[in-house]
Each structure stands twice: as C-alpha cells, then as structure tokens.
Amino acid sequence: MKIQNPHDRFFRESMGNVTTAKDFLTHYLPKNVLQIIDLNTLEPQKDSFINQELEEGFSDLLFKADISGKEGYLYFLFEHKSYPDKGISLQLLKYMVEIWEAKINKEEQQQLPIVIPLVIYHGKTSWSIPTSLGANLNGYEELPKDVKVHVPDFDYIIYDLSGFSDEEIKGKVQTRILLTLLRDIFTKDIDELIHSILKCIHYLLELEDKQTGIEFLETMIRYVFSAANNLTKRDMEVIIKEIETTFPKGSEITMTLADIFREEGIQKGIEIGEAKALSKTALQLLTAKFGCLPEEMKEDIKKLDVITLELILSNIFNYNHLDDVKKIISY
Image (cartoon, rainbow, N blue to C red; front, side, top):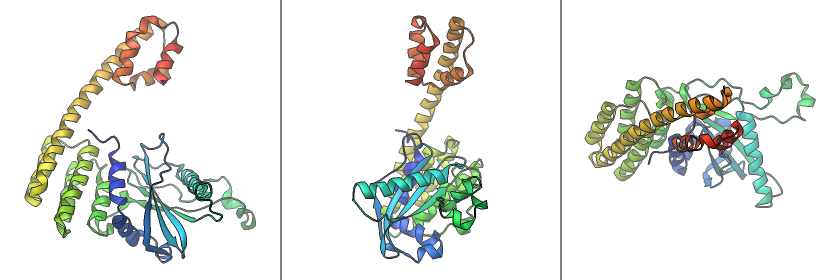
C-alpha cells in the first residue's frame, strides 16, 4: 500500500531511533545548549501533539533528557510542506503548553519542565520566517524592557535542510542519509536526486552490521519511491542496478517495492482521470439544474473523490436545493 505521508514515516523511523536522534543533537545543537543537556539520558516519549488537520504538513517527536541536571524535554517539529508556515512559533507555543498541561494533569507535577523546541524544515524555498514569537507580535520590539517581561516570547532552533551543503551534513550513516534525502527529495533536477540516492546507498557500506544496512536500505528506498513522484521507470532501474551491485541481498526487496509503487502510480493516474471526468459531468448537470454555481462550490467539486462524485451524480435529480449538494460535499 502506498504510504500516505512518506515524509512523516521516514522522519519518525529514522529520528525516532535514539541513536540517530542523539547523533543529530551531538552534531547540530548549539554548543551552549549541548553543554547543559545529558544526551545519555535521552529517552523517546510516545506523546504527539499534532492534530489531524495539520498532520499532512507536520510531524513531531518528543524526547525526555536531563537539562541542567533536571528533567527536561526536547521537542522536534518537522515541517514537511513545500513552503514554511508563518504561524510556526504560535504552533510551537501551543504544543509546549500541551506538554506542560500533560505534566500537570497526568503526572501532577508542581513545577514545569524546560522544553527546548527544534524545527526541522526541508521545503523548496529557504526559511525566511523570524524564529521568535516576539517577532510575530505587532510592536513587541518597540516595547520597553520592563514591559517586555510581561509578554510571552521565545526562540526556536531552526534547521533549514534546504540550505545544507554536503559538507554541512555530518554524523553517522543513518543521520547523513536522513538529512541528505530530506534535503533533496523536492529537487526538480532528477539527475541530482538520483546522485543523492546513489550516494546514500554507498553510505550504507560504512555500517559494520550489514543486516542493519539492508533494513535501513528498505526504509530509505520505500521513502524515495513513495515521495519522489517524478521518478521514471528508467530512474528506478538505475537505482535498482546500483543496489544489486552494492547490496545484492537487498535487491529483491527493492525490486518488489519498485513494482508496487509503479503499479500504484498507474492506478492513481486512472483514479485521477476518472475523478476529473466525473467532476466535469457533475458540474454540467448541476449548472443545468440550478443555474450558475458559486465558485467555491465548483472548486470543492473538482477536489472530490470518485465515490463522492458518484453519490452526487446518482442523486442529482432528487436534489431540491444547492444546500443538499453542500451537505454531500462537506460530509
């Protein structure tokens, strides 16, 4: 089955591993932050604070660790949309409050733990949004210092992978592969993407445990074949041939994945074509019955899936008002 949110899965499977998370933090935390955190106490938490409306664009991971000798938390927010979200600092504040509320309500803690927010971004454009809550508050910078203390403000640590060079991508094998593929997955230059994929395949040779290498090979190839929609059959064959040469034991898994995603790509194309045809018919019949349709309704109908469109078409002569159609669209 095609992965619905491949960026989320790849991020969680990779960074959710304590060894990889610790390696990333070792190489990328600011020195003044790293020196007060005991990474040997790093422990993943099961909590997630992303709601359904935002999960297509964001993922999160929460880690507990000793900060300055006391229990604290590192909160990873991974933005896997193409472009940065201007409301990120407000979202982070909301999630941090939810973490604190959980500590009060579930664990009955009297003092709140330190939460350090980190944002990982891999979009098509560079991160140009201020990294503080205060920068988003109108007039905050003009306030006197003795007034600013009454207004909430914090900075988050941003990792804009789109601007990372190969030399800046450091760490162990899994960390380098994670950051390299996240950085390059949106590139329009398919040759550049394939070059990065082949480079990551060779990174796996550095692992002493070859079984771990094969397992992570499946993770990364599953991500690539699912997330890189511009890969052609020829591109897949180039990747598979490289794996056959480098990791003969992993080639069978890779070819199976390639067949699955190629078949699903064809099926997806059929579904999209069918939905377009049905939406066109629905618009024509609804216009004939009710006259000119609101532009917003037209756009909503164009986005509907095959099942919903078939439902509208089968009942079109039973509708007495456009509100009847709106109910189906919003259901």
